[in-house]
Length: 490
Ligand code: NAD
Image (cartoon, rainbow, N blue to C red; front, top):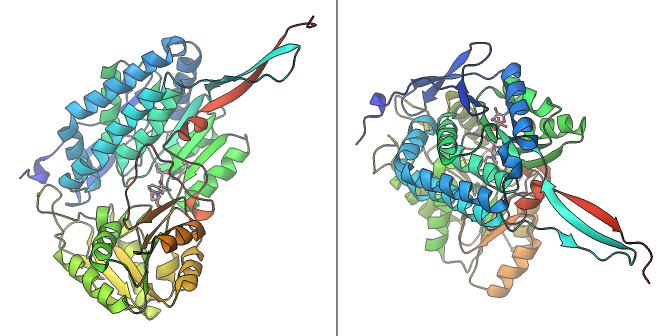
C-alpha cells in the first residue's frame, strides 16, 4: 500500500496560453489531503489579472490561432489523443484524486477514470458530425442553418468528481470548436492541472484550454463577470449557481447550471429488498455521499420500512472507512473540515427534530474528515434532513402508505435531478417514472450515468440545462441562418 504521507508534489502553476505561469500577484494556496489533513503542495492562486489573461488567450485562440482552421476530424483526433494519454496515466490520475479529494483508489478506477475517457471518446466521435441543415424556406433564396462554436467557455467545477466533471464540460466544448477557461475547485485543483499537461502533450494549441485554480469569490467571480466569456458552464451548489445566473444576466451570457439534489429512492412493497437495500447503500454512501444525485431520501412502503432499515444499517456497518490507498477501503473522508462540520450539524438538527439515528451519526477517527455512514429512520418528508442537501453519507428513510403518497412526497422538494424506484410491477414502474419530477429516473437500479444520456435537473435547486449526450452539443454551438438571394425564379 502507498504511504499517503509520502506523496508530495512540486508546486503547481496556472496554465495560460500554453505556458505554466505564476499568479500575477505571486500568491499561492495550499491544497490539503482530506484523509490526513496534511498539505500536499501549494498551487498558484489565480486573481482577476490572471483570469483576464486566460480569457484573452482563449479569445485569441478562438479567433486567430490554428484551432479556428482545424476541421472537426482534426479536433476529434486531438480529443482521442487526450483520452489515450489519460488512459496511459490512469494510475497517476487515480493517485491525484486519492490524495487531493480523498477518493478511494478502487472507486476512482471503476468510475471517474473510465467515465472521463469515455466522455472524451464520445465527443471525439461527434466533432466531425456537428452539421447544420438546409431549410427550404423560400423559392427566391437558398436558406440554410450553420452551427458555430458558442465562443469562449468558462467551465467552473466542484470538488466531488474533479477530473470527471471537468471533462464533462471540456470534451463537448472542444468538440464544438470552442475554447475553454477551466476553474477547478480550490479544494481539488491537482487532477485538472495534470489534465492540462496532458492536453499540451496531446497537441492542443495554446489558449484552447486554460486552467486557472483559485477561489470562487475571486477567480470564479472574475471569470463569470468577464465580458469576453460567452458561455458559463457550471457545476456546484444551488447558492453559487443562482448567483452565477444573476451575474450572467447582466450580459445575457449563455448559462448551464448543474446544481444540487435530494434524490428520492422509492421502494415499493413488492420490491426485491436485497437488491434495493444494496443499491440504496451504494446510492448514498458512494463517494461518502458527496454526489449530486445521491439517493439521500429513501421512501419505503411502511410494511417494509423496518426490514429495509435493518438491511441498510447492516450495509452501513460493513463499510470500511479509512486510507483511500488501502484496497480494502470502501469509504474515504469528506472533502474538508467545513464539510464535516456541516454534515454533523445536519444530523444534529435531524436528531432535534425527532428522527431516529439507526446507525452512525458521528465523526470517525483521529485524523481526516471522516463521518460514519449514517442511517436516519422513521423520518418525515418535511424534516430538514429530508429537504436539505446534506452532501455526506447520510440516508434519510421515510415510510409511505401508498403510491400516491410516495409520488407526492418524492416531488415535494426544491430539487429535481434524479430519482429511483423499486418494484416488480412493470406498469407501476412506468407510471411512477412518468410522475416523478426528475431529469433521470432509475428503475430497479440506482446511480448509473452514461456519457450518451443527458444529465441535469428540471429547474429549481437542481439547475437548468443538460451535460452529456447529444444535447450538450447545443450548449456549445450557436445556430446561424444564412440567406442567399437567388433572384427571380423563371
Ligand atoms: P460550490 O458552488 O461551492 O463551488 C463550485 C465551484 O464554484 C468551485 O469551483 C468554486 O470555486 C466556484 N465558485 C464559488 N463561488 C463562486 C462565484 N462567486 N463565482 C464563480 N464561481 C464560484 O459547490 P461545491 O461545494 O464545490 O460542490 C457541491 C455542490 O455541487 C453540491 O450542491 C452538489 O450537489 C453540486 N454538484 C452537482 C452536480 C450535478 O451534476 N448536478 C455534480 C456534482 C456536484
